[in-house]
Image 1 (cartoon, rainbow over the protein chains, first blue to last red):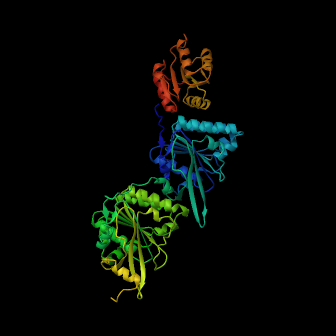
Image 2 (cartoon, rainbow over the protein chains, first blue to last red):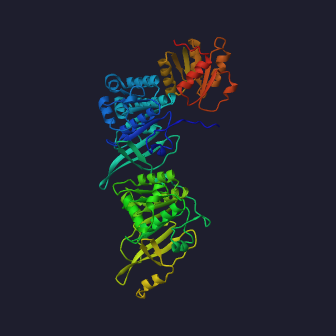
Image 3 (cartoon, chains in turn green, orange):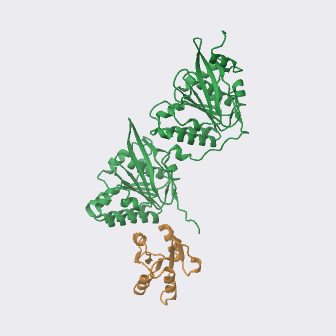
Length: 481
Length: 120
């Protein structure tokens, strides 16, 4: 039997269409449910303006006493607002008179005739609670909802009803009869506020399950699909024959049998000042030299400081940046959203066909999420996607304690998400801090597990050619140099 | 134009009637073939829009009834159905698969009446 294809109408709201598998299905009645201040009206307005911008029409019915002037003045603060679209492409109609002076049936007839005449792609009813209160019986309101759904089907449009309730009743008539239900919540998690959106019903379509963070700024609504939901599939596993990506540090590359396998992820753990970032800059500089574009994503040091650091190490990062072989991105620590960072990162990787990526300070991610338990799955999903994009990732993790022989990663459960693990440490020896490096694991392939002393100078990192000096340092048997 | 809408899905039939009336047409409703055949005896229509799967008397039987009826034989019929129907084998003037849009229906009406869908 032939499959019936229903047109999908993209909302064009950033991130929302990803959650909705491409948009809302034409001919459907959808409810946006949320408490006061969750942004239902902003979201519905933005959909109207975005569609109008692309040549479609929108009808916006208001059932509240709020004047259109007031509604427009609130909407005009958003960048999607364009008053030249009003009337020809977007029409605001007040339904309050039909509800208060006539009957709910008059409202239904008003909507019917306005939709028939204007032929919009989207119809918004703000809000449905006022309509349900105007009907004397549940059955009559049920018929109203059914007629809206039928109208959407016949007029090849979507009808969006806004429902302003904080406590949502899953058995409410609206939710039973709607083709889709989008719920918006806002609340505080510790000192931070969190806006979350989720789809609880979407007839005839798949969608990204679970809660997704969203923001409302001057640009409008920005939905950040949860990274774990967006990239759930395991990435391909690099084989033994995968290309090797080295650091350009002869001894280290020899220990790694040429470098990390392409498409793998590496975590370099170590206390502050052990050289994790420096090693990462070597990795990027070597890639740039070999024609493998790279990205540096850091949280602690600004781009000029990173370039300055490169100069001190003899790594011409500024030249690589100038010729487009390297992109340096500083993400200052603030109340970032974890999914916003992964979204930005994947965007950057896709734009520049990146082969090498350095994430300097994965420990910073523990400050971002609203749910700490997300981190292992988050990193697994991000790693999967980076692998799928052919990116070889080197990440640093600052562990506690200036010296020591134990690896205490800052976040539980994340080491398993990395294919390779390096450990950099300080060791006190004769009133001096020495640096040691060891390869703890390489999931795919052989490596030299011996400890190496290394130094950082104006020529960058230099590893001792053998493990002898490291052995002497650790056993306290070294001779005076 | 005066049309008879035959569909047991009351909401769809009522919405169609309302939209047709907004376009200046007249429309009457019947919920199955039996009700429709009674109305066809009592009133004059320019076109019939009928669903296929209905209780009591389905769309296929209604179509046969109309085509065999001396006074109704040439009445344009548009069949609509959500299910699979061998519509090519039926003596109808147009077919629409549900869900359909009002614009699609108007196009079928125009084809079925040869563009003679004058408003009443």
